[in-house]
Length: 201
Image 1 (cartoon, rainbow, N blue to C red):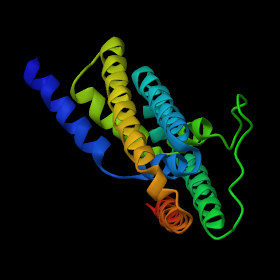
Image 2: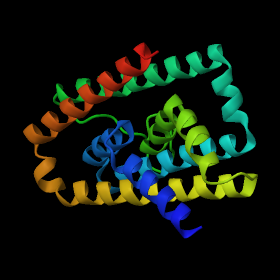
Image 3: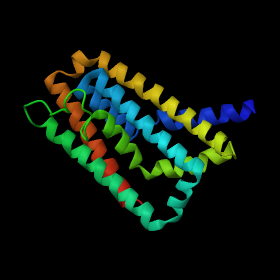
Image 4: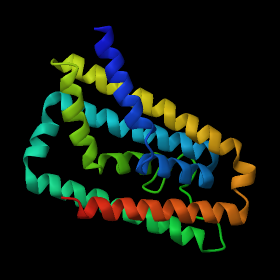
C-alpha cells in the first residue's frame, strides 16, 4: 500500500513539475497581475483538474475518449483557446499601454481564474492522463476521486510556489523590456502548444 502510494506520488510529481501550458499561463498571469494573478490561475487550473478527476471517476472521461468526434472537438477547442491566449500575450508584449484586466471582484472570461480553468478543461491530455493513471492505483469511485484530488492539490501547491517565486522577482521581471520579452516568450510557447495540440493525431 505504501509502495503504491509512493509510486503514485512520484509519477504525479514528475508530471506536475514538467513545464507545460499551465506553467506558462501561470508565469504570464503573475507578470501581468502580480501574485494574485498567479494564484488565481493556479486555483483555476486545480479546479479544472478536479472536474477532470470527477469525470474520470464517474467513467465520463472514458466515454469521451471512446467518442472520436467529441474528443476531436475538445482538442480543437482547447487548441483554439491556447492560440487565443498566446496571441493575446504576443499582442500585449508589443504594445505600449498595459494589458486590460477584468474589473476587480468580477471574474470574467479574461480573469486569471477563468483562464486557468478553461485552459485545463480544454486540454484533452488531462482526459488521457486521468483515465490512464488513476485506475492503476485505485478501482472504486472514492479511491479514484481521492487520488485525483491529491493530484489537484499537488498541482495547486506547485503552481502557487511558481507564482510566488515569479512575484518575488516581480520588480525585476516587470521592468518594461524584461516583462515584454518574457510575455513574448510565453505567448510564443502558448501558440506553439496550441498548434501542436491542433495537429496531434
